[in-house]
Length: 414
Image 1 (cartoon, one colour):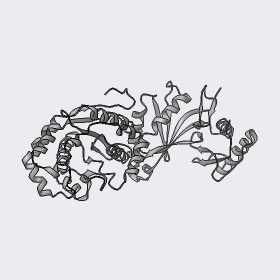
Image 2: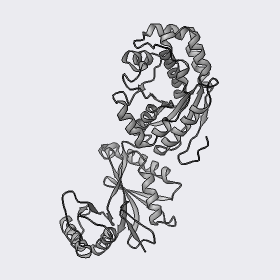
Image 3: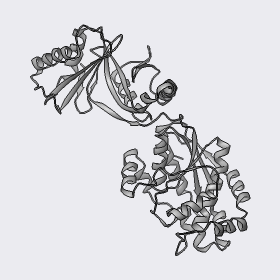
Image 4: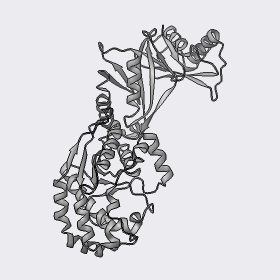
């Protein structure tokens, strides 16, 4: 027997009794792209197929600001499969809402049957919201609302409440079929990953840089990750954290790459150069130089950091300006105007906060002076770069990278 899971707003268990289960996707700003909209939607379709390829083979239709995902024939269009597809699709950038829907015939009886099945077992008020994309349907939206609503009242005695109901039953009449659904799952919004190019994230083991990566993926960037380890003077713990962070973030784009640089000896050189209070800023410049070299090799168009203005001494406006001087690629700082509470809230929502809070020996602790400079002068830092032969050192560091391929959902072993 098919049973409604009222907490999840879906039908579970047993063979489908009504129509075909499918996933209805509502797009966000993609629909505003005018003449380029088709390019964005094609990219989104490719991303969707890639995201769900381990669940089931699917077919995807584009229809007037929505997409319909259906399981290929022979792929098993059962409710459990569709439910798994819907959950996975919520992580694909460019989507606002994901609805687990029933695809039924274009006749009032089929619509009523699906509506009664979906509302079975529910308590509380409800409303019916119909939308006709195909005006040839014999009933207007208002007439369809009244018909379906009256049948639900007759069958279950639920009260109708048009403003702020406890349950909303949605009906969308399309060209060849009707979609009936209740609650939806919120998507990530933004743009499809890959539409804005590629960039390299400087990933620490902290809270900020994973959130920065997420925010730039949400703006359509495909990102690679660069982590600086304190090895050989620290243990591998920070690498394990970076791996776990990238593995968690991989669900938003797939195919993520993590590059790790053993940075301990370079830090020792900075310390020996007499950088003193400028050591942290000099280190940041060297990291960005290394990142720029690697980004260019990977086809990256920008560097991404988790800087938030004024959060720590190295992130004053003067120090950010001094750091920017070291490279030609643009540096994107999506968190620059956010405070720590906002950043932590996002980290918690995307699942990286608990990983970031794990203890490790961060490479930055090896170099931190008692008092750090908050107003670094560019010329002083250029002198330190010359003493270090920073350009050659950055090339050597970029040559030393180790590549990893963390995959979302894999085991915990790095």
